[in-house]
Length: 381
Image (cartoon, rainbow, N blue to C red; front, side):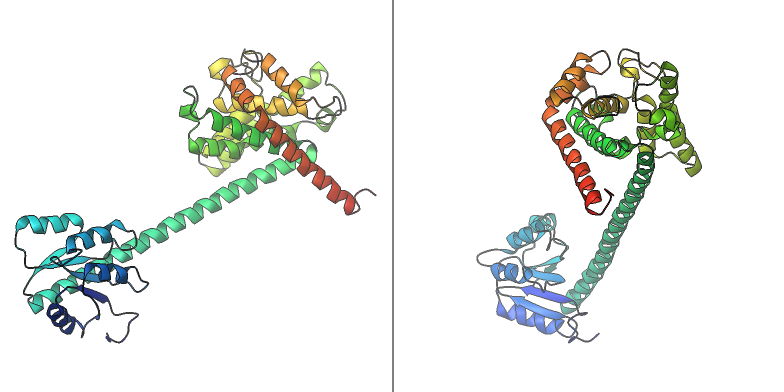
């Protein structure tokens, strides 16, 4: 290895207030390494703050001004210098002095006057250890980046799959797309608000809330299996037709279960999607469907979705009804507190009603933008 190849040759910083000591160490190490010098602690810190950092530091303990112990403490306190090995050079022989240095983070001690073979051997050993530690650190950073990349890919695949399924549902019912986007954000707002509530905190940790947001768009996926004559009927359903419509909860749950079975593994966000698809029409007093579940027997995810779903249905126009005002929709939700809906979820909804209005307005504006674009491009005939 050539001493002139600065990209490969390790750099040693010698810090000593005695010029004779610096000269001895520089002459000893120069044939093997790039040698940098500092006459005091302050100068040493300036050097290590630069872009060309040393790979190892030989640091005198007893110096005027800032002593070696303080220099070492400052080096170990900084993220960009804490991994540089420090070897103390000292004439102190007290055990407590050596212990103090090791506690501060030094890797070794060399006594003065220095023994040349001891210096070169210890510097070489600690540089090898540093190289190994740097390699492991770089490998860990690479693995962390790779894991993050793979997680991002998996999340993207999940989101694409959900978008594909909800887009398919939207082709059956042109109200579905906007409804899905609004309710997804309503659900997120409710879950974030309830995360510290003693009744909900165990099921609304950060990961669960993220999965809930991902899976919420699948709550009405079962409507794909409802015949057009019922799904798109421009009027109220007959009791017989309503019985068919009610099967969308079971159809949605079964479709998601089938997908999970084909994968041959349990998928966390699909578990929540099944809960929501199957149980979002259950009611707090047991009057809902498909199972007539009551109170806390209804999954938390479904209880949250129920409020989001009904609010959006109330404020949205349909062929068989006009849109209800925000204020009237809020009054309807409150009227059903403890009857159709979990009282605590309704209380969260009341606290967030301004945010609900904002979310509804934002996605209505998105819908209008798409409609205007369609007309501009000739969609109007």
